[in-house]
Amino acid sequence: MTLYTIMPLENVLDGLSGEQEPSQEVWVNGVFMQVLPVAPGMGKIVRLIHCGLDDYLKPELAPGSFVMFGQPPVS
Image 1 (cartoon, rainbow, N blue to C red):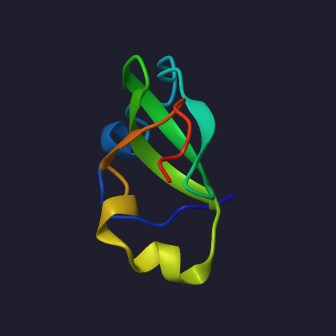
Image 2: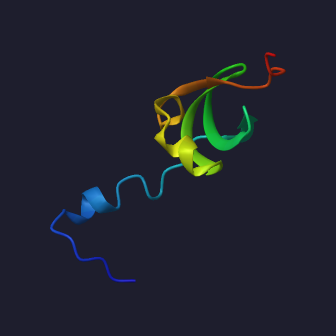
């Protein structure tokens, strides 16, 4: 693979050899997503894995948002 960039090589490869933060894949309100746990039952969204196209437009499902998981849905 060839990468053409004006960025210094140190910036491009920064974090490549470091350990990955532990993440979980969870279902929240019908959306399958990858989250970084920050507290028991709470996580920060990393990416959406399986969802409808409209879900990408919802600001509450944007990467970096916090969600509650591991609880029964509220009806």
